[in-house]
Length: 140
Image 1 (cartoon, rainbow, N blue to C red):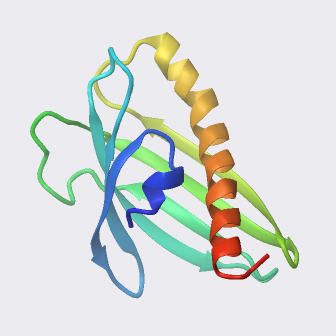
Image 2 (image 1 turned 90 degrees about the vertical axis):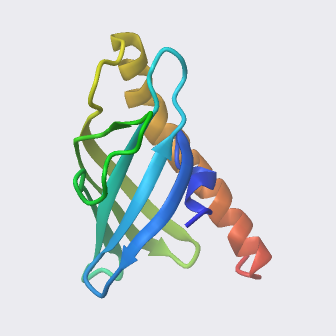
Image 3 (image 1 turned 60 degrees about the vertical axis):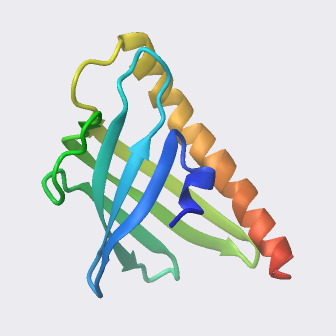
């Protein structure tokens, strides 16, 4: 799960908590700029295959899955999806939708910056990592 932090915006650490046939649970520790306090979250992730050969990853906060971590504000609400649709042999359309309540107080300028930067930077870095992985594994 460490690779995820290579492309996921504001990710300081991600680790697998549990894996089952129905879902995975991951712990994510964030690195946010001052003056925001550090946050963490537990996500339940389920995967749905779609008729077009793609997939949807459903993310749902599970704030009570593990006890609170000292020095972190637990994100109480988060839900979203990553939808991946194949568009050709080397082309995938990715749609990212997320809704969250960060918990605690966050300055409005920082919240607004995060809303713009998080999806853009995550998708940009996902492309970089995917292309690098493809080259390394002989995919391109």
